[in-house]
Length: 330
Image (cartoon, rainbow, N blue to C red; front, side, top):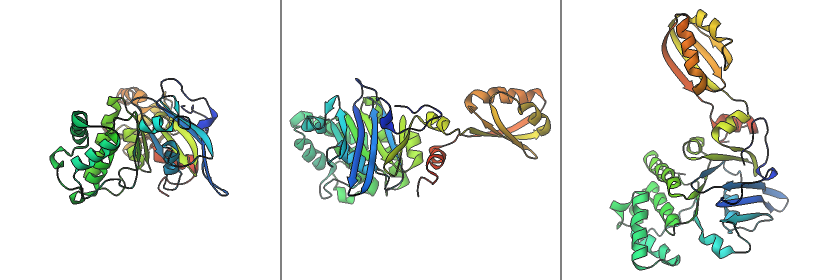
């Protein structure tokens, strides 16, 4: 469900796509005494789609995915994976899910091959089929060359990549990743993101929880913004930006003709706001990628010479601040 521009709604308030969705959940609610930690959350994920749950620590992301996996009792709500109900067919649903928890679930005194062989057997894989899957997973997570080394010799990032590999081993239809880059070095983080980025092409539906705005923007086809246990908005990046009325910002650095260019552009289509400096024009544009060619043409028409163009699109951090009144990392 994409929230249309001009409205903010909890995801459970509108019908969810049916039929081809890998995951559909509605009205997920979890209470501890008088405290509600997840409040009426709902969303769906299609095959090959990466869906991000974006919110600060303590927003209810881990509690939500624990309910989706059947690891935590729900006080309300429904979960369906491949059109099978979690309550009616728990073993079948859980067998379709690959869950990668925030805390490492590996055996550090075993090698990647040994870890994958152990968990593969738990999923019923044997013989040549298991060996082939281990080879495929090691390549996907970039650990083929370290396949026989003990995991306790690995960096934090390599251990997390192995953690992801275990979740992929049984070829799940839905892969759930809970903050998979927490505490890793930048190089390992980039490797993890690159691995996740490739999964959509295989048809796997991915649910990715994070409090890092840049990860959600890089990986996710759609994002659900969660705050204090509620889904406050959902959609593609552009839909979310349009929802709160943010605009693209463009700075033109000019060698000459600033005043003439400013006068020409103040009423140009797509220009929401314009301010000028000694050698710069700062413009707020509804859609920079559409408006910019005509903007540059208009500047050229008045004889102004452009030295550089800088485009800064509004990000999910700005959207979160607008919706909640606080920074994402608070």
